[in-house]
Length: 123
Image 1: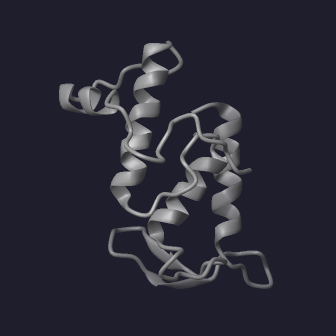
Image 2: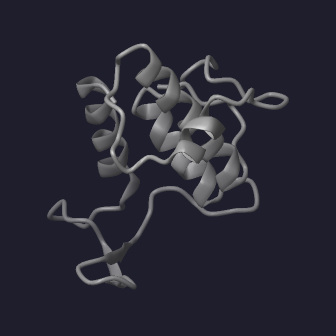
């Protein structure tokens, strides 16, 4: 991810939480992991706007060229793996020592239907 992409993601995340009068995010309580918290969101969860569509929106703000429709987590992960493989192949991103051969093989598979790593980015 580029530095401008990281800044786009940070801005998206900052704007994703509702804030109180002093500008602090509104906490709804402790999260399931140490140091985590549930925050009041600016977006409303619904059948058509889920955690997966929210994640895809965040990644688009980071500059990743995700398809306009991403309903399931696999829809997103297939695209992210493919983008990562393309970036590794062109020298834009280092190969992670944590990636497996299976990750690399899955990342270069053609995307079915509407999913394309060259889709327009909404910003």
